[in-house]
Amino acid sequence: MDWSEYSSEKFKWLDKRAYNTFTQCGEDGLIQAIFERIGETNRYCCEFGAADGLWFSNSRRLIEQGWSGLLIEADSEPYQKLEARYANNPNITTVQAFVEPHGENSIDNLLERAGAPYDLDLLSIDIDGQDYYIFNGLWKYQPRVVICEYAPHFESMFIPELGGPGQAGDRAILNVGVARGYMPVCKTRYNYIFVRADLLDLLVEEPVVDSSLVRLCAVMSTPRLGFLTTSDCIYAAVAALGAAFLRGEGAYWSQSLTSCLEEALGKGANYILSIDYDSAFSVDDIKRLVCHLHDNPEVDVVVPIQLKREGGEPLLTTKGAVDLRHRLIPIQQGHFGLTMFRSSVFERLSKPWFKAVQDPNGGWGEGRTDADIYFWKNCRKNKVKAAAATDVVIGHIEQVITWPGQDFKPVHQTLNDWRKIGKPVEAFHKPPAETAPKKKAMAMK
Picture 1 (cartoon, rainbow, N blue to C red):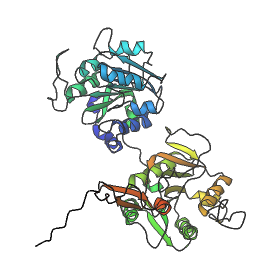
Picture 2: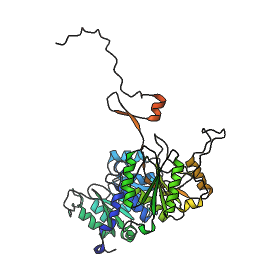
Picture 3: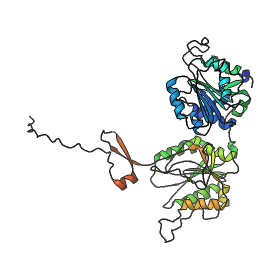
């Protein structure tokens, strides 16, 4: 793409993907979104100055996902922490050096000595000074994505003297990136994120599912009393999509949900979304679930990541280990908190879809099968493929008891823990009375 034809508006969709785990201004989420679209090749990153490898790091999240890399830091104190942090990681090379525009410690030479691939996936330049010259000195290597820091408070076209104080302004960094064959797709408070020009078409505009192909219907078995927060989510998300919302009431969750599902099928829905009364979600979560089914025709059901209430584990079961770096992971069973089904699932399943089965002793103890678990077993029996979306995370609303602590700051306790142990030991208790002799009380006039 020619610079004269470039329009940053085509990449505005990336802005809503920004989030921080280790980064400072949303770079973790932006990096994830970019590589979701352009793909990963060698999973190799280089960052300098890398500081201690944790604080405001653009590479830490990738390294935790198994990437290899070269981390460079000049200052002794943070470098010692960096070296110690990765001493037992054979995939990471740490180097203490001042990166120079040319000569022995040029970025090209440092990458070559580390054995880096010529088209490494990510290069992050953050040395608070000569970033402009380092970027401009990149000749031999062609990273696919480059993050380069600029000075937000300096004049836009300011360029420091070679070896002198100061840091280049945003327009100066922009120009050197374009001259090196890169186009900016994101700009955070301190960084430009560039993508190599030959990859840019993969990032132009967010993929959109043709709404005329989506006949979405949301279903919910509702208790007589519930959380208004979930109602707020439904009004803000389901209504915004123009989807039908069908809800049932009754003493039996499975019966009212079955009735809602049958009604949704009767309305001609091709996507059916189940909602639980205690889920917290947004319209973007629903859109992403639809896109997952649209883009993956071999998948029949997609569930988001959601935890059990009161400190529980994820509400899903896998067969063996899974790779959480993938956007979709295969599961054996999930939940109904905000789950997207193809309508064809219910045509393939034998009825009843939900059935509670007593334990071998005829009771409801260990060995029973709850109605929802019966559903997922039914899915496996009929070769329905279910997956969990690692990029869709929803909340689980729960009640807690708040006690005043000894310092009168709140102490939170789950209802189950209160039932088991009573008031927590951290709750306020009156200090013991003084043992000194009591003074005669003075009468108040």
